[in-house]
Picture (cartoon, rainbow, N blue to C red):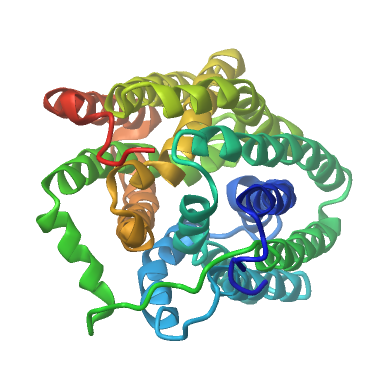
Length: 407
């Protein structure tokens, strides 16, 4: 849609943004099952993919996150509406996933799927900037929470449907990819339909120029450092969870439904329960304290997940991971709106997203290597220790947890 026109009142602008974001959130739920479960499951079970391909698919969303800083830099010179800048890469995501449905061998499937997941995450800085422009600062968490609940709810429903389909006949996987691709195309339309201002022009030559804010804004840089430690501890085991449940080497080798139950359905159900509570906390309580609580919840969940092959214990870990992801999705997407100057929200977010991309790209590769040497139980305990360190590092910054901006 064209930029946020003066003809739209503040209330109407907010209402339309919210309405289209609920559509976007619902479609994101379908795509979430692809990035979290189905793509890796198909690669492992249908194509017998090796660690290199599994690492590529697992890292692809995070490569896209890193590249988002380049997308912001080059699109900032166009003067296009932020909604258009976010819709274009999302459209390419859908098209790549549709083409992946036609793949007849491992490498075309893996490359097209990886490209689709990369494009999916290029739009994040533009979306966060739209939220900053169109939602009041004291209610952003609340407005953002329902679309996220729709994301996790649709993810659960489609996760059940897709897993049952694959359990019935794995050769039907192209239909799962078609649905993922169509969801990507429709999501692009939803983002395009959001009212938005033109993207702010970049005032630097190099695409990585935004990284200067890490050093110019001490609090921003320090919180990013702790987030990097915590995030690496989380992300290096993210694709490993699917491999842990499906690879016969670990003695579990669950069905598509049980894998989806433990990886998607239980965590997403707990996300849906926790999101409204944590969204209110995001708007009202000290952000640093909230981040510390989420770190410890993540750490306990990961430790339980890899502690034993017992499905009940793994389910408990999945539930804690889901609660942490519920809060983490709010905090991750919106925290820069508390600390960045309004005109620099997209720039700050691009740095945050890119650093997430770096740790998410190298994390799965290191994770698949490390599990061969120290085993899944030790992987869980190492992750917990890193989460604890990141939490303790935040204690001196509690006094800054209310952010810099006023409503």
